[in-house]
Image 1: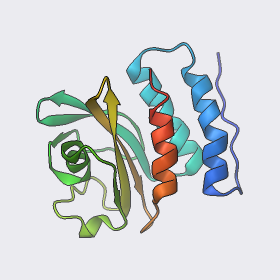
Image 2: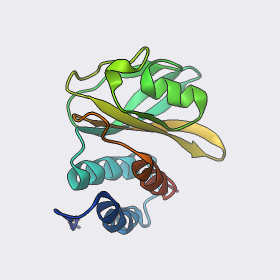
Image 3: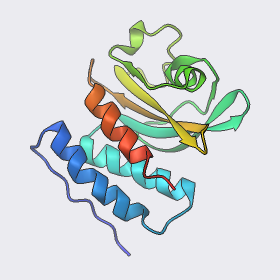
Image 4: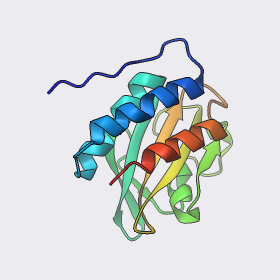
Length: 158
């Protein structure tokens, strides 16, 4: 079955998210495989909102994240807990919004074109199983609106 997204080209950020969330819900309907759902979420976010890089890092070991489904340029494969924005979000168990990645202590530069970033922990049964990492090639591109809607998308995961 072919799946297509209905994209809003000229709407506000809120309108784009509001249009996208029910579509992601539909893409995930009846699918319980985490990797399949993460892959579709990454593709939908990249295509609809035009982010530079969208992807997931999954907890692989007690102290390490491993690259999961993503859309964008090639990425770092493994990130230690507490390192970079992703590892710090995991360690702190909180969403991190970084307006300028060059000013984040210990930032891991997987792509030099990345300028700002938002990372949200993904939880299942109260335990962090990974993070959603979204990068922009623009400074200060993320805010509480992104945090709110991206969290709503993560909350759709079975």
